[in-house]
Length: 345
Image (tube, rainbow, N blue to C red; front, side, top):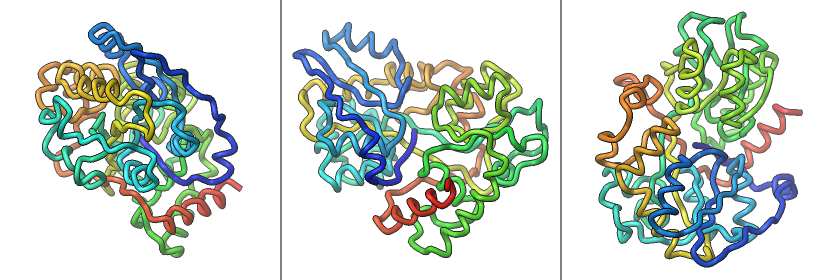
């Protein structure tokens, strides 16, 4: 799902260098918290005899810092499409020759050699979706399909908003509202993005990028609107039917999370076995049914539950503009850094 800004010293200083123990017949996975179906892990372990150890991170900044420290013994990591190029450029992930892995041809054609990995050297798609915002219609039942609702909210929602604490995600949404390229290197353009975020700030109750916390806060009524990922929104609406997911007329931010192998992975063979497992239709559907995100595997739809398959959060309206984030230049990343610091001071 998600998210990259920079590798500042502050981030590095906050990341503990804990190492993951590696034993024969094991696989060490680094992933977002709760971002894989538990039954999937159980089935993989049963079929292969390989013990899966899972460690979690809360932002791409943390992921980048951990891999820069030496990978901490991970065999597999999950990361967003805009991070794949960054990790490859810095020599932090292995070339895996995806086309040679069993199940590669199950990948939907558009995702086999995508813009962020045009030769299919480093990654395979994991899940994909959109990232907009959700509103509790019992609090505000007006038209929500505009970014202005998030950044200049109507009175019933003011003071009841959660915004992403990930600079990368918050800036990406604000850039759509400001009609500015996400990777702009123009300080004047990025000032427009900062103005949008500053306008919103007085109405924000919390800044959080923790999917579980966002879902629980929406369901409990602690907040009435939040920037959110499509799958999290669906899981929230399953629990509280008044929660609605927006598809802004300005465009929806789309993302693709990918499986990569950190440089120096202790067990490359086990990593490739796990990737091959993820590329099977039934397994991909297992993840979609649990996490409520689209997968990129042909044939998986046959195993996806109807209530998930037809959920509005997984079905952007016809003609909806999807804006996929790209990997930014170092100059653009520095601008993002300065913008976020200016917003929070």
